[in-house]
Image 1: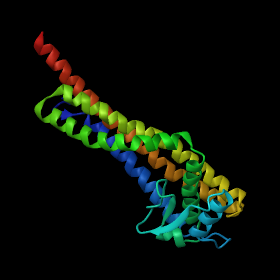
Image 2: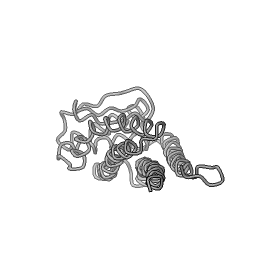
Image 3: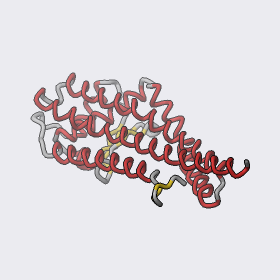
Length: 237
């Protein structure tokens, strides 16, 4: 282990990652709370905004349905459906229109075979397996001192990091499309576009925070594994 006066200083990396993720999530919730109270002058709710965007872009085959929860909005490429949480589905606010437009951005990515969306979808099964096996390998390696098994676990964790990195262009592109949709179709007024962009940018920051957090976590594991490998090398000499 990497100790300094009895303290494993690699935990600092974990704490930094946790802090970054925590504050990013708080920023998103704060932005969402603010803009879900600001009604748009067009009077359109999230469902109507999504329906107009989809129809205008030749996606009349995509359904828009309501789901329970808060910020559980997503686009399901396998079922070709945009799912909007209750507040977004019925809301006539900047937050509702922004989130609805963002999910429609994913639907258009799907239609256009956007490379990063396809790549991310292909990685999903590998990322799911890596999450489970990587964690198990690392835990067994740590408990029983199997350094080689730890390195295997770290390699599997890198698949998760790759998945998160690929998610970044997918989400930023969807947000960019959302802003363009809202502006081009005049779904929100010019004065409302500033708040919409702030809402979309705040949401994008959570994905950046996840990447940084995972990267720091992997760095910590690398330091631990490297320390173990070095210690074994010294013992063999």
